[in-house]
Image 1 (spheres, rainbow, N blue to C red):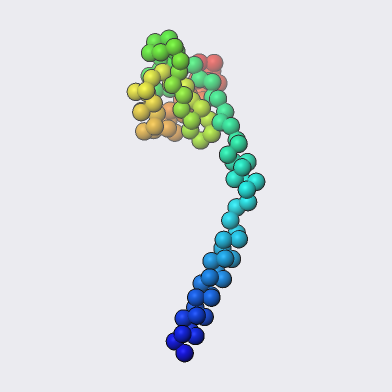
Image 2: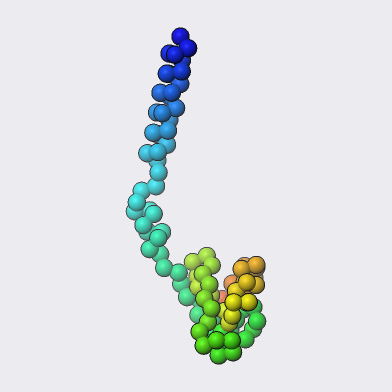
Length: 101
C-alpha cells in the first residue's frame, strides 16, 4: 500500500510539473523583448554635474541605459551618482533634452 501511495504521489507531482512547464513564454515574446532598442534621450548637459557631456572630461560622453533609455553623462564619477539615484537624474536629463541642453 505504501508503494502505491508513493507511486501515485510521484505521478501527481510529475504531471503538475509538466503542466507548468507548458505555460512558459513563447519564443516570440522573448525575442521581441530582446530586439527592442533603447532610445537616446539626447541630453547634452550632464544631469549630475550640470556641465557639458563632452569636451571637459572627455571627447565622448559616458552612456548609461536606464529603463530603455540611454542617458549621456560627462564622466564615470557622475555615472556612479546616477546609479545611486536614477529617478532623479533621469528626470533632469530628460528635462535638459527637451530644453535643448
